[in-house]
Amino acid sequence: MTKPLPGRIEVITGPMFSGKSEELIRRLKRARIARQRVACFKPDIDLRYHRTAIASHSSQTHEAETVSTTEHLKSSLFPQLDEVEVVGIDEVQFFDEAIIALAVELVHLGKRIIIAGLDTTFTAEPFGPVPALMAIADEVTKLSAVCMTCGAPAIHTQRLGASQELVVVGAAGLYEARCRAHFHPWLDENSSEQLEFPEASRIL
Ligand code: ADP
Ligand code: MG
Image 1: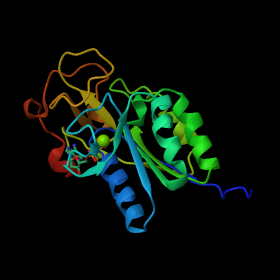
Image 2: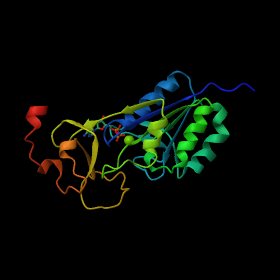
Image 3: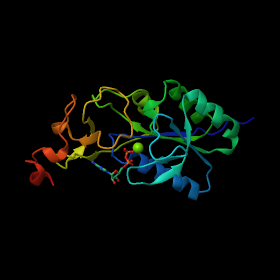
Image 4: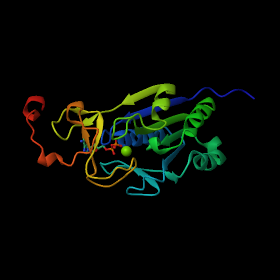
């Protein structure tokens, strides 16, 4: 048996609202235009909008299967693996560490793996398996959002309101993108509307 050509690991990362899901959906749609067979997964912690699709904040969607663990993802993917050329994963920060070994296994089988996820938590700590995935990737795309305080490029996800849980997903108005200057690793009770915008005219 001839060894398959190596595949490719692509990581799309950045804070919330930076367009990670949009970019993942764009790449998966282009792969399908090129008649490549695509399988897409997301963790069941993220049930925003849909169980059977990934969705962006701009309402773009792509069919996806919801799985609870890496093992669950494998048990769904492996029976169809011969047919699949491109594997997409959204919200990868919520997967267990085994997702890293799976990415390595898939790339050695010649698959293109496109992975989107948050690089940092709302306290600016590296998030779950994402740093390791960035390290082993062929290509890392680090996107920025727009700071909701001043309009500058934002690399942070600011948690608003009272919850101390690490994982609070999909609750509207709970997070916003912030630049370094306006990010507070503690909770910010102020919504952007309540803040002064002294820098806005300078930066925009
Ligand atoms: P991510 O997956 O990184 O959270 P999405 O792809 O779901 O991002 O959404 C990106 C879209 O979110 C943008 O195209 C824009 O329409 C919208 N959006 C809302 N708030 C912001 C913001 N602060 N900065 C940039 N885009 C924003
Ligand atoms: Mg997203």
